[in-house]
Image 1 (cartoon, rainbow, N blue to C red):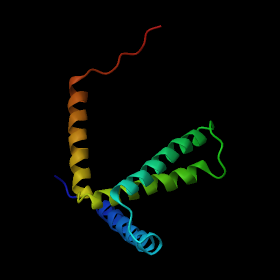
Image 2 (image 1 turned 45 degrees about the vertical axis):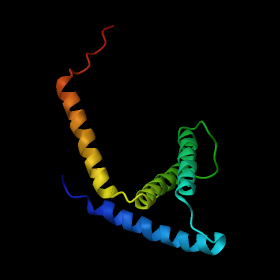
Image 3 (image 1 turned 120 degrees about the horizontal axis):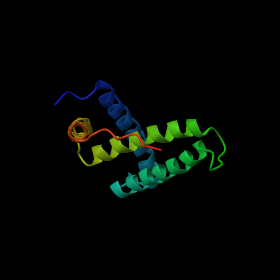
Length: 123
């Protein structure tokens, strides 16, 4: 299996550094850090928001601000949530990502190799 891209490892480290700052504030304001369930609720909320932003991007949902800028923010934040959840679950996301992409690619390559291209529609 190939090594994980260094940019993924760097992103993970940055995400966990940001999470540790949130934990300081959670301790100060709430007396405890968020549980795994609370983290997942936060992630789920952001994923739902992405759905509305996609509607705004397509012009079917009005929002204030720039839908593309908001999508960039929420998609990046979703990556952050993934790194945080993986860390809390003691999952090496770098390895899991590489392994998962290899498995998906291998399956897709096999399917592509054994299927014929679509035939053009005849009028």
